[in-house]
Image (cartoon, rainbow, N blue to C red):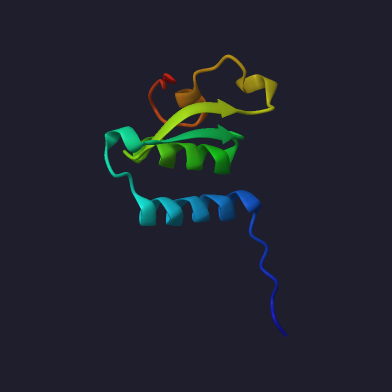
Length: 87
């Protein structure tokens, strides 16, 4: 008997994204990959924090359907521990 493992799509996307960026890398500072994070729940926030920590990536936007998150600073919503200003 085999067990079925279900992995959320967001985890798979984050894993693919991490592998892709790790293999590609930015050639120079102007090669930053601009990222918009859709969804700032627990998984989306973790992905957004990962994007912020990577020098070859630039978080340029974030979207979520939760009205409680509207108007709040993105750094606060994603648990960054500091304000985050989009370019």
